[in-house]
Amino acid sequence: MAILKVARMGHPVLRDVAKAVDPAELDSPHFQDFIDSLIETMREYDGVGLAAPQVHVSKRVVVMEVAGNPRYPDAPAAPLRVLVNPEIRFRTEERIRVFEGCLSIPDLRGQVPRCARIELRALDRTGREQRQELEGFPAAVVQHECDHLDGVLFVDRVEDTRTLAFLREFQRYGSDAS
Ligand code: ZN
Figure 1: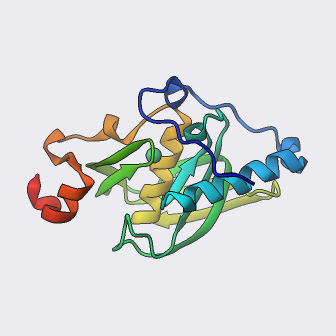
Figure 2 (figure 1 turned 180 degrees about the horizontal axis):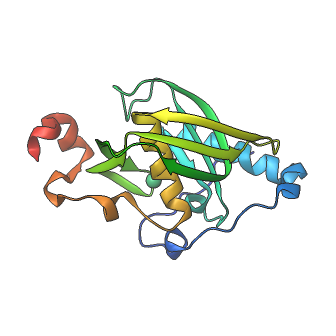
Figure 3 (figure 1 turned 45 degrees about the vertical axis):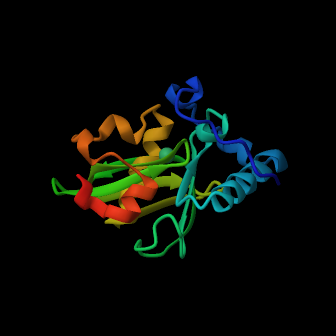
């Protein structure tokens, strides 16, 4: 297990479409160790989610967890999830607006519209199929992380660039700056 180096915006790996994971690969100690490292790296940098392409591995794997996060102090807690080959289906027309950040775009925040309720299907780290409905902030996190698997960054989805703010200014002035 190791803390992995996070790719920053501009690195081409963040713009690639990641490859599906062969479920047989989940049995290998190497892959399980990679998942542990992904989790460790997310926690080290206070992320609420991390996608494999963000650590230079172009595979469809995402981890997420919200637990007393200093970068998102107001976010409701969400348990640790490991999502392999995740797929999302939108369950409503309703959109929520979330001020997002990204470990690959350090210190920047911007407001992004996200589907308010999604159905999520994925394999867990043992290869078992999981299906769940998510709404609100955790649903937005999943959409952000799954975007990474398709080479999409949150700044691509910011509709009003006046909502962009550096973290310190965001914390000082909040969304009023927009
Ligand atoms: Zn991100």
